[in-house]
Image (cartoon, rainbow, N blue to C red; front, side, top):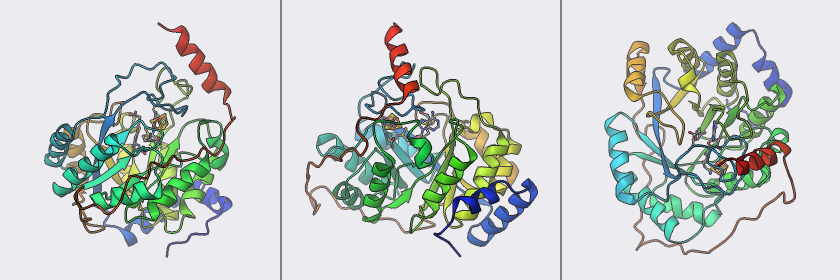
Length: 362
Ligand code: SAM
Ligand code: DTB
Ligand code: SF4
C-alpha cells in the first residue's frame, strides 16, 4: 500500500538500515509493484541550452557562472523530430525536452514547444518537458498537445534548497508541481544528492516527494555532476553506496513510482548500476549526453541490459497515450501570466563568489 504520511525519522531509519536488509526490503517492494526485468529508457534533448537567469548552484546552464558549455537558441521542430526518431530507433520510449528557462512564457517559443510535443506524440513516444515553472493554464496547454510527463525537481530538502538556489523558493517548485497535477500530465520530480547536504536533507527531500498525494509517477535521483565554474565545482563525488541507499529508500517510500537512476552513471560500474536496478531503479537516461554533460553511450547500455537480462519498457505501458489536439483546435488561449517569486532578497555567498569569479575570467 502506498503511504503519504512518511516522516523524516522513519525515512532516515530506512536509509540507515544494514545494507543487505535495505536492499532485500527494497527489492521485495519493487517486485510487488513492477516487473523487475523492465527498465524505462528516456532520451534527454536540450532544446534550449544555457543563458538561464537562475542561480542554481549545481547548474552549468546558469548564465552568471563561467562554464564551458555551448549555448543554443530554441531548436526547430524538424530538428527535434529528427532527434526523437534517432532516440526511438535506439530503444528509447520517451523523449525529455529540457530548456534552460526560469519559467515558461506564453508566446512564439512556447507555441513551438507545443508543436514539438504534438510531433513526438505522433511518433508514438512518451513526451516529457522540463521548462522551469509553469502556470495551470500552461500545464493544460501542454496536456492538450499530448504531453505525457512534466519534470520539475524539488532537488533537495526545503532547508538545503535555500543554500543552493536564491532566485526562487521551494514553494515555487511545489506550486508548479501542483499546477501540473491540475492537468492530465504525469508528474516527474526528484532531486540531486552530493551537493553537500546531510542525510537529514536527503530524507527531507523524500518526505516532500512521498507526501505529495498522489506521489510523482516518476522520480529521478541524480548524483551531482560537479561542473567547473559552478559554485559546487569542488564537491566530492558521492559513492555508489550512497546512491544505492537513496534509490532503495526511494523505492520503499514510493512503491509505484518509476525511480530513475539519472545523472552520475558515467562514474558507476556495471556492478554498481546492477545493484541499483536490484534496489528498485527502473528507469535511466540513455544517450551519450544528458543536457550538457556526458552519459554512457547507448551501445554500452544495451550491452549492460543484455548482460543483466533487462528489457526496455514499451511506451505507454503504465498509462495510455494522451490525445493530441492541434493548435487550430485548441480550446486554450495565451494568458500571458508571469509566475511570482516567493523569496526575493535572499542571497547565497558561494553563488555570489562564483559569479564574481566568472567576471574576472576572459
Ligand atoms: N530549467 C528547468 C528547471 O530548472 O526546472 C529545467 C532544466 S534543469 C537543468 C533540470 C534538472 O537538472 C534540475 O532540476 C537538476 O535536478 C538537474 N541538474 C542540473 N544540473 C545538474 C548537475 N550538475 N548534476 C546533477 N543534476 C543536475
Ligand atoms: C533530471 O532529474 N535530470 C536530468 C533531467 N531531469 C532534466 C538532467 C540532468 C542534468 C545533468 C547536468 C547536465 O547535463 O547539464
Ligand atoms: Fe536554469 Fe534550470 Fe539550470 Fe536552474 S537548473 S540554472 S532553472 S536551467
